[in-house]
Length: 187
Image (cartoon, one colour):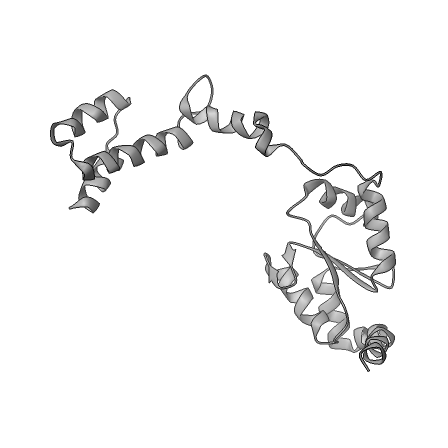
């Protein structure tokens, strides 16, 4: 019964909440009130854009409310400095969509899977969490797509290049000293 009421209250194409309230008001019990509340919430978050409509308020809130303002204080490092430092300090560095444990793109997942076969430490940054970082990495490498893999400070390419190098045995040679250093450190 509740599902039917919710479905009917959500599919009514009424131009205003007043009409929906009139339609639902005759049997204003708890179930209908829940359906009405859900309908009001949907209108608030997805109303027509522009003006003072409920839908436009959501977009304004994220730009103005203090909870959505950046909290990170500037460390004096630019994003370009951070990218340069990442590439310099990590023998294998990947800028990807997601993180190695939870890639958010098939190409990123493929690159991580190939690199993990060599047992090398992988430094990684999620470019989806910071669009300015994404642009800085593209500027640094002069390459537009992701993932971007750097090995021993040099830009190697994306998942297609890593896969090709792996299949030809070139990646094994390139990562040999990195994986042997790790084995010695673990011993």
